[in-house]
Image (cartoon, rainbow, N blue to C red; front, side, top):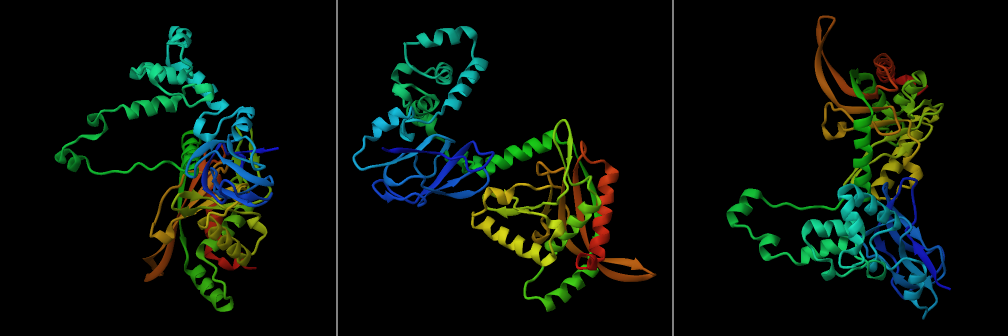
Amino acid sequence: MAEIVRMPALSDTMTEGTLVAWHKNVGDKIKSGDLLAEIETDKAVMEFQSPFDGILLHIGIEAGNAVPVNDIIAVIGKAGEDVNAILSGAGNNSATAKTESPAQEVIETITAALTQPVQSMISSDDDSRVKASPLAKSMAKEEGVDLSKVAGSGDEGRIVKKDVEAFIESNKTPVETKTVSVQQTAAEGAYEDVTLTQMRKTIARRLGESMFTAPHFYLNMEICMDKLIETRKQLKKLSEDSISFNDFIIKACAKALQKNPGINASWLGDRIRYYKYVNIGVAVAMEEGLVVPVVKNADIKSLSQISSEVRTLAEAARDRKLQPQDMTGNTFTISNLGMFGIEEFTAIINPPDACILAVGRISKRLILENEQVKETNIMKVTLSCDHRVVDGAIGAKFLQTLRDTLEEPMRLII
């Protein structure tokens, strides 16, 4: 008997997935465990293996499209099986005939209830006796669309929101579509709309929630990096693997968090959680957005272990091979833009952390010491704190510990 393949929940926060690429075609023979597709979650692009043996009878979503978790994306079975009957029996049409999940239907109903009068809700079912979702009816009324002229793509020909949108688009006049003069085009300029990836949607949502729910305050400090620069030079002579400045900062933060546990915490609404372990998230920039792989138990790892793990995680991030477990469990985060020449900046707290450290570049500066002008290397850092968890004095003590550790880097080695 044929088996339905649905969009899997590949992370704990995933609500929909984008089908990046199919690795099998309709008619191909498939074994359980074969690579079937690549799916972009809210955190990374992940490989999806077939859960069944058989023939790929049906592909329900084209590459590049997104559907909610649990929507049908494929059918695997025996050659000759009736795909339409299988899809009908599953209570879900193919992706070409379905764009709204049961959850979306509920949202449509709620949205319509909030955006149209009660009387229109009561009479909407009688509008030409056309089967349509509440939101589709509301949109049609708003845009002056005759629903009897709209082809429905939902169950049993039901009209949904995207059908109304498609009808409006197809019936635009040339003037509505785009008729502007050369002078207008030059004045307005060209532009490109880019559809949000699942990752960018999640970044926007999480950081928006963080910025507007967590009361941020910021603490700045300058750290002398002269001794650390010399220590790093000595280590490079002893080891083939180069330990970066960021590796030193990660280790120093881990040490500082051990001594200042009030920073290693999360706000949970009705309580504050203080962690007995130190997991440090390291922000990695990608074209699609920012990902934060996590160095677990950084407080008990050596510099060389941290360095090796960070390189492995960064490579996996750039190859889009990070797994959800690689990006969860952080108790503190570091964002370093020093390699881009940024001297100083503030960062938005990465939930569920209470703090994030923004690290700038190491800059040369002339100072007066013992009545002598001396050149020194200074690095600026900014600690963003959630004031619900961390008070100013606690944040200041953490930065003092961090500064003392980096200015005497042998503490990180012994």
